[in-house]
Length: 54
Image (tube, rainbow, N blue to C red; front, side):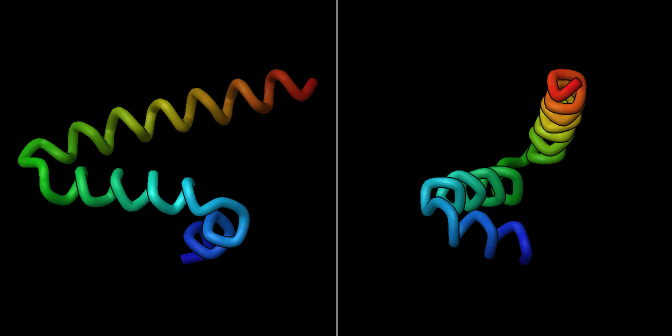
C-alpha cells in the first residue's frame, strides 16, 4: 500500500507498470516464475545501487 501511495504521488506510469505486473503475475498460469524473476532482478538492482553509492 505504501508503494502504491509513493508511486502514485510521484508518477502515474509507475502505478500503471505495477498494476500490469500484478495483473500478469496473478492471471498467467506460470505467474510464480515471473515473480521469482522479478524478485532477483530487483535484488540485483538494489545491490547495484548500494555498490554504486560508495
